[in-house]
Length: 138
Image (tube, rainbow, N blue to C red):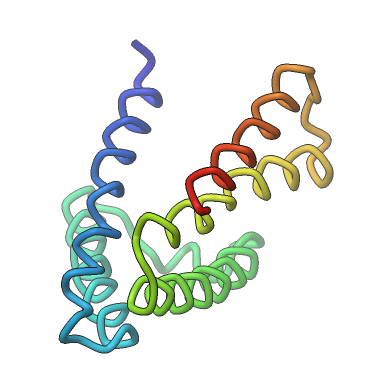
């Protein structure tokens, strides 16, 4: 099996537990604090991985792509703050499918902005994804 498929499946399994755990944790914890604490753990963990791999961040601080990464960080922050808040206010079974529409939107951005190949199969997949999300959220 291709390594990226294995990693994608592992990521899916790990991330699938995030929303249910967040929903339980945020019964007694403000959503903004949950974002801060969970991402602090991520920040420290990624820092340790960078140290373990012997990578240096410094050369990349002035890399031409760094502004794009910074913009992505802002978008990720906004997305996580609103996602966590939605999970604090609503049921996981509705919030997660709606949030999952990012798959459809990202696919469309890839097609429109990056001139990725459009096939009948991709379009059908996008349409069926929207249908599945609508059916799960009702």
